[in-house]
Length: 435
Image 1 (cartoon, rainbow, N blue to C red):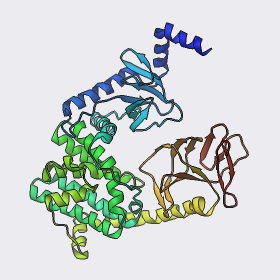
Image 2 (cartoon, rainbow, N blue to C red):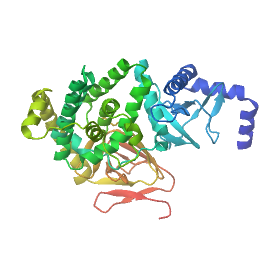
Image 3 (cartoon, helix red, strand yellow):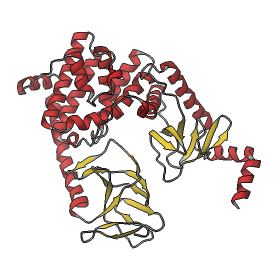
Image 4 (tube, one colour):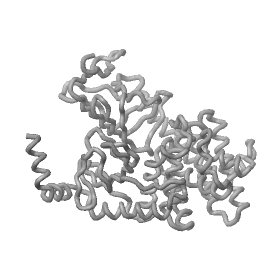
């Protein structure tokens, strides 16, 4: 049967490939336009920003059907050629997200369909994700950390948003002295955050080097003029204010702002990232020799310049809601019975803007999709990713049906995998085949 099917594909390519295209929710003409836009962005940059071209294979994926339209063939031949593009199906256990992925022997820039309609936002996204594909090959020191639980607290959120406001003022300043003064305010708010939360500098640097540099690249390469880049950077600083959580999204705002300030005050900074990892703010402070204000009175005066009193009132009300949600999560994932899924070869999708830290245990992800050796997990109402990324914790399951389910989640296990009682009464854990 397999042999006959393969012969049919080989003998009738004109019938099979148009059928694949017809099934795809991604119009091939629109996909070609994305690939052409990406090539134009690469050509315009010419490798100047990072010393290497961002061009490479691009895969567009419809998240509902997991249909693919790609710019290049994959190394293992999973995709079929349709005119000048390649089409196929992303397997259930493969990652689907705006990111860089290794799939079917090829490293891809992967983007979920549809892309933003507005040209500037679409170009920024394309360049951002192309940077991620290239990033491992660049001499940029990796940093460990990135949980950023302090950015879910009242003081962490308050100081971060003051920093964002000061960065916006710095970018919009009409002279170098005013820009330097506003940058000094931003660095003062950051320094106070690091003083209050000793792990903040390392945690923030990890995400800023990853997502912050990617978004900076998106802004710089995806926008052709200084005016458009400024507007894109300001949009990033403003658009994340409404995020339910900043723990995984803050660097999308700070990365472009600090990158553009470093371009002015610290020429050549991009070539110096292969040394010890450090956050972009510290690089700006040291390179530009900016004096950072310290002391309660000076910080209070700086906060007043950015309407800190109103911001604190807003964040105080938000903190009350956060504590109520925290109590619910403690009851579900710490005090109550749970299912623990150990992770071996995990891929995960999640929304970075709505996370909540949980008492040193890890981070609560309201929605996520995880695949691993044991199968597939789909979460719609909360799961905890442990801080070491070695396990996912769920509220205890109902094991009476054919597939394990729990409140707001569904688990599809591969043959041979089962759930067995855990160490506490009511807890469950995975049992591998033959173990």
